[in-house]
Length: 76
Image 1 (cartoon, helix red, strand yellow):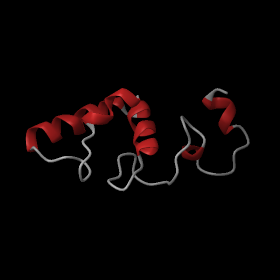
Image 2 (image 1 turned 90 degrees about the horizontal axis):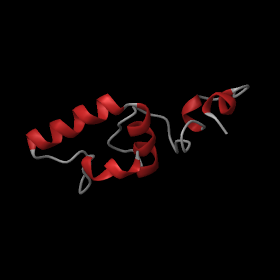
Image 3 (image 1 turned 90 degrees about the vertical axis):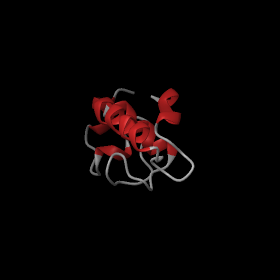
Image 4 (image 1 turned 135 degrees about the vertical axis):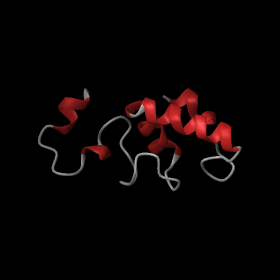
C-alpha cells in the first residue's frame, strides 16, 4: 500500500499509518521513541537524521541511553 492511499480517509494523524506506523506520536526524533518510530523518522527526515548523527559524533553522547542514532542507519 502506498502512503497516499494509506492516509485517504484516515481520521487520525498520518504518523500512525505512514512508513511502518508509529507506536506513539511525538517529535520525529524523540528520545523516548521506539526503534520502529526512529526508523520512520530516519526514512522521512534524512537531513535531520544526518545532522543529529553528526551532533552525536561531535559530542560523544548517544541519542538514547546505550543507543546511538548512527547504530540505526541500516533501518532506513
